[in-house]
Length: 249
Image (cartoon, rainbow, N blue to C red; front, side):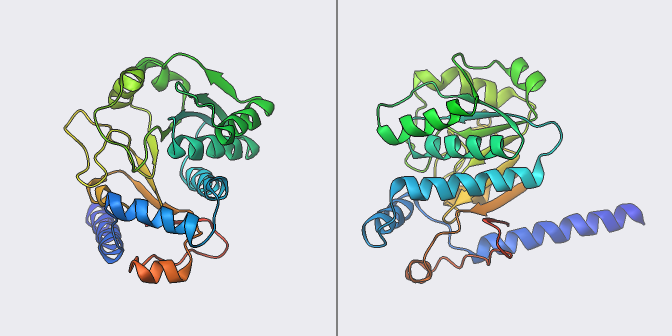
């Protein structure tokens, strides 16, 4: 009887999640890019403003689900997704977590240099070498995947080959920001050797690849999309509870 009740609750949770995903607009790569352009050009958001809001919402989603031991590894790529990761790391540190950052391809862009400097000034450790699978499993309670965003086009560059291999094989839960790294933005995982995140934090609105996500936690973050832009693209976003910056789907 207890097993049947548990299975019923799991089934109900799955169908509720499925309905919420179906109801929302799932964005193509072009739509995601177009919305960002409109936010910058028509709504006059700055890149660093959106990055701060996105990274903050990611940190809040992570704290809702992972409290076991507070050691977190943040993997940052060279673009905006990596910037979200740097912001997320800073906020997690301020919330009492112990983040470590792996940021192999840093840029001379002043925005990213400033975000890196902010993390260094609060004594967040940066590691130079890609952690191996056994290091991920022994040292961290969660891995934040902020390597590649919705502008990613395969194949994965050589710089990130080692860390991607470790991610595929690790048993430590992975929280992917916006897009699981290495996935096709619209078609999902390339093959069985792709990473399988435990959490996906979609930003602005879920991308088409979200329908292939099978992890435990799916959140929507970045409570900044103006109502008129939501209406223009028929996003059908859920309401955020109270003053939260993220909502579980």
